[in-house]
Amino acid sequence: MANEHFLAQLWATIESRKANEAPEKSYTRELLQDPSRARRKVAEEAHEVNEAHQALLHGRDSKDHLAREAADLLYHLFVLLASADVTPTEVYAVLESRHLKTGKTP
Image (cartoon, rainbow, N blue to C red; front, side):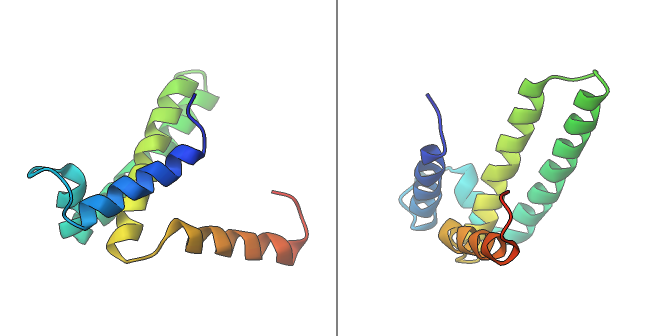
């Protein structure tokens, strides 16, 4: 069963592509080599998540479609972070710090 531990595996795969440990043709490597394309993909996928969410709330779409779009967004966001040498651990630390400041549960 998939769970949050897969995000660590995904990150490791992206990092290996960044280190040129990938096959000759790799979509991830292509995005890493063109950060502006990665930025466009993040924006595009975020828009698609918003559209899928709105359609779901109006009964015109499925949770499965929203989950697929969210997966696309997470993947592209991870690639963008990797291209800037920002790790998920750094992002998690910011989230934790914000949580601790508010004293509220997410």
